Length: 164
Image (cartoon, rainbow, N blue to C red; front, side, top):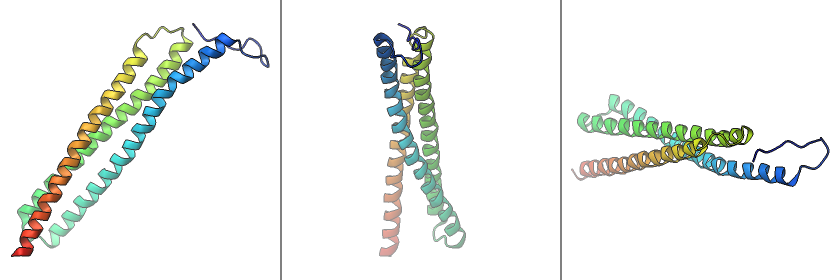
């Protein structure tokens, strides 16, 4: 059923038309919630990226002035560079998810206006967004694991130095 505009301004919308409008708006709500969740993850991922970059800069500065073990410092820098690339990949996937969810919402609205001729396109866009979100979650999980392993290694190295 194609949603029809109100026949005359100032007159109430026919019930069937109103129901169709509400159904379309309701279906557009799910992608909007996914957009909000994705945006929240993007803020978190961008903060992580900023922290990793700050740590890399600090390592490089301290390496220049105080490098008791150049090999350890180089390993730290390499691990943080891998972390930065993982967070970057997660951000790219999250931006893809955000775009897919916006496309889903717009596709649902456009589909209603053209008489429901888009078929599975809005649903495919939503599935694509969810897949991007899943991929980003996996990549962020890998980055967190690398972060903890790196921290453990740095703590072990520091404790070893303190003992000797």
